[in-house]
Length: 487
Image (cartoon, rainbow, N blue to C red; front, side, top):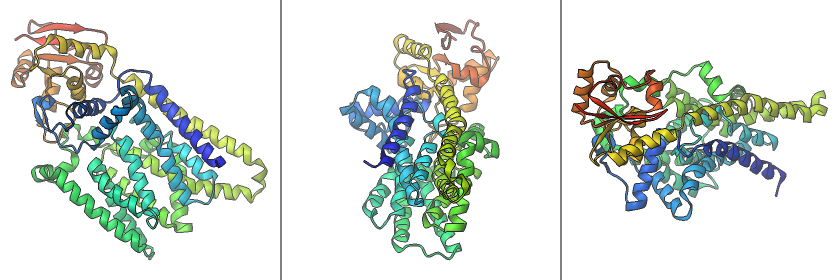
């Protein structure tokens, strides 16, 4: 085995071990979406068919989801224990991104060191770690496949079959695939502006992929587009929450989220790739960066997901800048200091990327669902009728449905859901007992679940009016409380 492959595998082990170290510190998950995926996977495992109508979400509603990711997890459960499937497999898939990053960076450069360093950088993007560790995330499949699709387009002459297969799979798995369509259009425009002729097979592949994504998206999300129009792109997110999901991008968020090393080296890689080498692959990756920036600026994709995507792109492009730096050092008097310079760069990566990623991961684990909160929901499950409705924070909705198995007032799956965010906020925070109980009766609330997320989001210690005769304390713990509505 070549030395570089041994090093690449070592980087994978390091990345996976880093992620697994934090994921294994808790039995629970950090993101509410993990419980959505867990619940739907359980349903498929038991019924061999997806949940089309959810009896618990918003008290009962239809779900728009292709459920391919849930079928993958359900299939993995047949041969692997749940602990591995839900805890370690997502971390392994995210860590495996470094192989694809290496392959694309290798296509960009002629240097063996640069792709390895790009792979190392990609494994420790702070915002990527923060939003993916300890979560059963669909992006653990989406991101590797999207970047492999990019690699297939770069090598379309030898990867036509894989490109076609991924063109069919990707739009079914997740709508984020549409970003690739926009990126490929920008890629064609950039080449045309530079008077560079696009390869015939690449042009045909792009047209095929774009038409297939549009067709599949319309088939899967037809009802959403017909009823919501272009607002379906915003996933029907309540207006009050739009500024939370779609944040303005700025220099500080780029530096803190992506890191100064991939930001600077990635920007230099774009400049070198477009102005000096005029590389076809560099144009393609630059088009991906441009489309991601445009969508973030227009607030058409989630800030967290867009920044994660951007971080990986800049990590790949940093290989170009690293290659130029290595070539420059070799022709100067600094060549004899090659090893100390390399060691210094690794130290910088550790200080400016690994350390911030460690702090981000530690914060994410602290935000994981606590044992106290699980116990509170288990209490509801054991002490309430099966048709009860539980009021909780909107980001606890899927957790409540997954653990307590009771109806919820609201959760974060907003498509085709009524906008109840303001009413949930009012019920949990208002000091008016009359207003709170009127709204609770409207939604048929029987129990109120107060979690740490509620306290943090609304800066409160307990339910307003908790001491009145209308609420009876059911479960009381340090990080969770349950109240029963009496009047």
